[in-house]
View 1 (cartoon, helix red, strand yellow):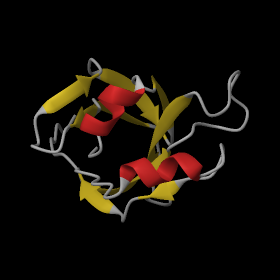
View 2 (cartoon, one colour):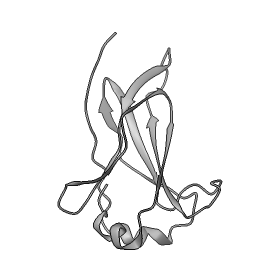
View 3 (tube, rainbow, N blue to C red):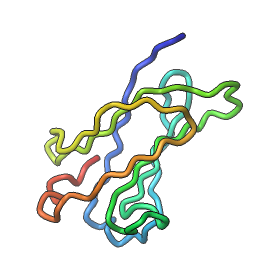
View 4 (cartoon, one colour):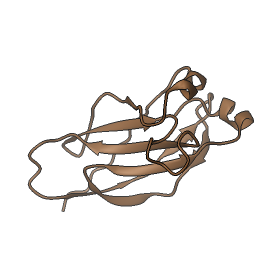
Length: 120
């Protein structure tokens, strides 16, 4: 078993303007490589259209982009939201998933806090 670590920073400039994006529409990161595989982050700023309360949550998916993977991949991951200074404003505990595609739903912070968490 090979263990590899890495990270990817998805910066969203003008985050407050993404609140007008309808639920179910995403913004995707450029591909990035970790552990010999290609990955992408899909960010739904107003959540999934199929969510119980569309528009009330932020959804982030970590997608495995490598094709022809012969066996399922196990990966340990965590997600953090950073404020404008780069300090952690919100963090979820690390989890392990089998890929491709691990859903993550973050309830939106109150409007006052949302202004402080415009980078992720």
